[in-house]
Length: 247
Image (tube, rainbow, N blue to C red; front, side, top):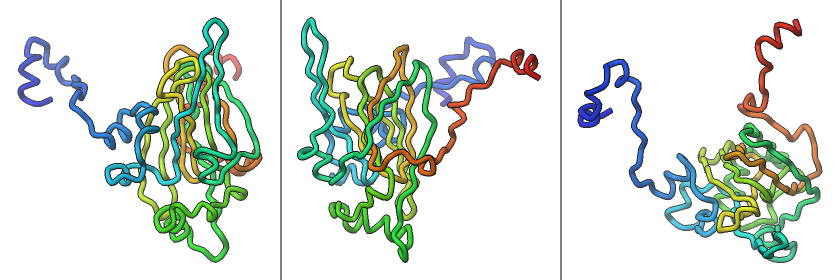
């Protein structure tokens, strides 16, 4: 703590003062929020990734887009995912070949995992990535959707925290951290998220509600495309007494 901060706590013992940490309430820039404590997904959906301010912090190839959720009083709701021939997925030429759903129990997480990018023969990975996302970022015909797994994710229940980390060769390492609301929480944070191959992603269920998600992939499920990074959060150890009994 700063000296002025310590003055506030002089009534505590030295042992109690030593571990004190003050929460940072200072205003954060858009980039600082995205890479640090996290930001509402609705703000990202409304932002322009190509703006001068955002280019340095936005992970190339990631798309975050608003989607309509129609609430029907006394009946329930109807949420749209995406249209094949219009919107973000049509613009980037990505339409999933497989759809799936997943449920995450409250207070659980899916550790970081990443899908390997497909690099054409005779091409250096770093050079290929720079061509795709720096030199020709809007030449979507270059993308090898059929040879690498891209995801598009939607959340229909609960509140999820998503963290993306760019680990592709030749590109700056960037982090995007944001919060997405399921359809049962109507508002600007009802979004779809496109995650490119080579971008590590993790998801945590926030609060006491299960998270249900629906996602489409550019390839059918292939176990060899599932690379795990820092995934020990998914492996809950048995209580020590149970382990002793099983021995």
